[in-house]
Length: 219
Image 1 (spheres, one colour):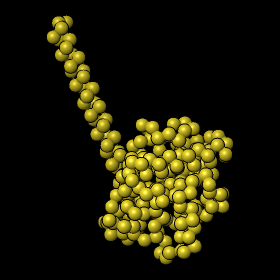
Image 2 (cartoon, helix red, strand yellow; image 1 turned 60 degrees about the horizontal axis):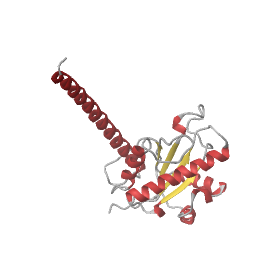
Image 3 (cartoon, helix red, strand yellow; image 1 turned 180 degrees about the vertical axis):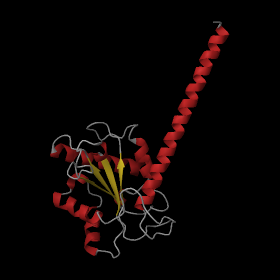
Image 4 (cartoon, rainbow, N blue to C red; image 1 turned 90 degrees about the vertical axis):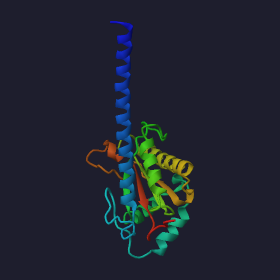
């Protein structure tokens, strides 16, 4: 084979590779956009005038009337680290959150780590774009960390807290979301999403809950 033909062969291979990478990138962008829209739709309170009549994923309607005791409790735990919350406070927060708009997001953390690496970045970035959108900007959100069933209760509790805090730091640093608007809590392996398979990947998630009882600011 001549040198000219060899160069053409290598050039054609490079073009195919470039096209493959471009196609993969387009798929990744589309997936990120879809996740962002699902988060936005799930966290938008029912009745908010943004054209979203229903929500997908894990979602529940907002309460019809404000509960002052719940609001006072929520204010009292703002700006506190997840590891400072007692078991009673964590369960109180869970009882309030169960009636608010929520969504589960699977974030691919490295095994037994709270580092937001390249695998976790797309999901966290999609979450940041959704929470800083006009529809949700100005709201108060709970970031609840969950693990799978592998390991001890203490180690999983600590890991879930670190992961929730890591997501909060990323959102504050990269999307300028006020720290006081993000309440973090960890539940370890106490609230498995898939109880029949404790080691399932869907158990390793961060649940985001919109704690606003009324439509959030559209500024």
